[in-house]
Amino acid sequence: MRLAVRELMAGAMLTALTLSIGLHAQEFKVGSKTVQVHGFGTQGFVHTNDNNWLTMNTSNIGSGAFTDMGLNMGMQITPKLHIGGQFYDRKLGKLGDWEPLMDWAMMDYRVKPWLGFRVGKVKTVLGLFTDTQDMDFANTFALMPQSVYPIDLRDASIAHEGGDVYGKEKLPNKLGSIAYTAYGGRRADNMHSGYPYLLTGIAGITLTSYGGPVFGGDFRWNTPVRGLTVGMSRLNEMITGKGSYNGQLGIPAQPNYQENSQHDWTNQYYGKYVKDKLHLESEYRRYYRDQTIFSGITWVVTDVRGWYMGGGYTVDKWLELGSYYSHYRIIPSGGPGISDSYPDAQRHDFDKVVTAKFTVNKYTYLKVEGHFMDGNATALYPAGFYANVNPNGFADNTNALVVRAGFSF
Image (tube, rainbow, N blue to C red; front, side, top):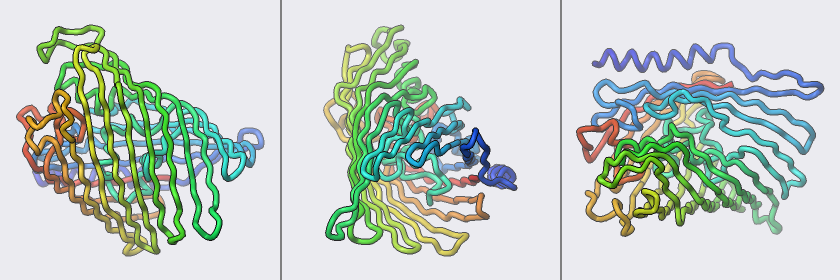
């Protein structure tokens, strides 16, 4: 077993290292304009002592079914107008399924520093890292705090189809600067994401579409304290899911299943401090959803509170050490399924994490990370642990080793 684990880890690292040799940013001309081309890829390995995690078969010898890649292009049309887009593909256990996606594609026109517009499939600004979560090479951690940035729900939050108004302005009297973003549009989830996968296992529901109108905004203040940024975000959604239900829960089968959110919103508050080789971050997110399910027959409330505190320190140009504590809890709200009848372990996941990030060269890196999880938060909403790949039930606690190698150019 140990040999198999070592072979999987070596294969993951070798893949990233081999692909990175000789890579650097590319560019070509379209008329008189230059198109810049960048890309990235990662290969991960995850081993858990109990509970299969993130839809992978991670217990026993572990799993290397953790791969993603992206290719993006951008062109500066005029000093104020920029266009760009990114293709993305991944395989995370049962998620992604190697279905290539247009991650984002937008036109950005900046009239003034305090006024700009973005249209297309635009990255969603929500908290510190939602709009940069595809940039693993820039992050300290192999897995970002899952209480706020769940990797199994990445498709649901990375971008919206619509438009933004944004800007930044200095404040008088040396009070720093402020930045704002307001947006509206539509969210359309990929059917190989975490929520559709969860429903197939616990309810016999197969979704064919999931999405709807979204609008929200972000406001952040770069304070007079050098390196300190604080802010808040709000996201409102009106989500409809359509598909079929096979009668698994005793309610008559519905070939035209539908669910609709009545109230669906997220509030997020955050702060970040950077000084020299040190960076510290903390965020709090509350996600609330009140929806009708089974085509209006019944309803369910989801009330999730997540927060984390963490940071990293650059020891040398080749080594950064990091740690965070991630706190995730599903609050009893009176709706079916989310109640005190669930054991406490199924309503929380408290994750203590330590990380070492090794920068091999300009293009290549390796992250080694330990997770020590109390609880599994399996009460009805995706939180990393799925009944689909845990047919014998769940242990209360899980320890995990995550190794992730990557390259960028």
